[in-house]
Length: 454
Image 1 (cartoon, helix red, strand yellow):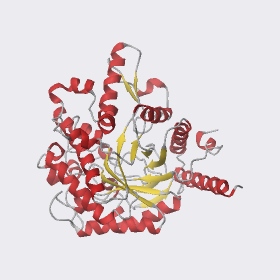
Image 2 (cartoon, one colour):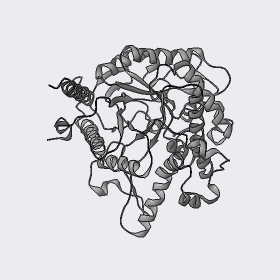
Image 3 (cartoon, one colour):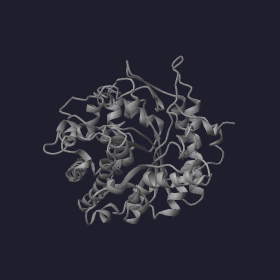
Image 4 (cartoon, helix red, strand yellow):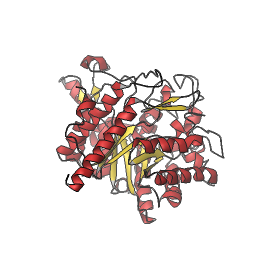
């Protein structure tokens, strides 16, 4: 019996548990220069030779900007409670400051209202990496002024949508923006400077805290939080060098973000490791970052393995890997959630992204993506196990609704539970989408039976 068949056996979540799907603006919207949208750092990065594996860009992507109603119908057909989406900052405020773009704002008004009409809760993310290019020309997130422009942006979006969205996330995966965008340079804006990367990480966290304070002062009723990409970090062996590297990598990936959020301090071992590359921190910054949150979102795909001698070969474990080359390790999600629950005074947790890229085949109008279905099911079981052990979980969201522009991988990797033919823009729900729909139907049936005492 496969994992996704076994999930029907006695697995029941609380009645108020939120089930959802997730996307991000740059990856699906397209309409790159339409209706007054400004240029983002990803628009520019896609023009860098060889930056994107297939030399593609996000100019059209899934054409969601024009096909949003069709996509909302698709979301509603799955029976999910929530849709997690992001706003394109340069679409609503093209230069990151100054005038607002009414046509861009109107698009998100239609999107949110369309979700509500269909009975789906909007979960809004303010920053999923597509910073206005104009701000990058002034230093981007390395410039402290961008912190204040982000707070303005957050308040502006709250003015337009705050009365209708269920939750507002400040940033998606600050580690990715800081490290992949500014230290290794494989993501936009493509810089390779560790000192800048760490300053960016600090400014992202600071802007999160200040935005929460400003939103609450403005009377925001939506739940407020941040989304982090986290993994347990395991040493490749018990050798002292591997153990030390695992501890450091845990500090850079997890504690660098969790400690300031919940302990008002950066981890000292990482500060010492960084030396002169440590960020400049002003008085009051850490207190702002630690502003209490209503939820914490966790994006989980796999564990991390630290090896001091040589890069870890993911195939050494003998486990299946996804098309991204990531080991499938669902028990790591349980381990991670328990660790957060035990080590920090966390608010309720959501799994805000979880899914797998696999080589799908469309045969006679059907995609039998058994591996993806199994991946999702096994991670849902992992969430249930964490809850059984006392972790406060409020939701789980699949990444992603649609096949889309997968950043530096272009269109070569498919994470969607819905297949997109990029030439025709035809959407085809994969077997994983149908399984998820049926699973949610069974969850609701169990809830209704429990409520009526049947």
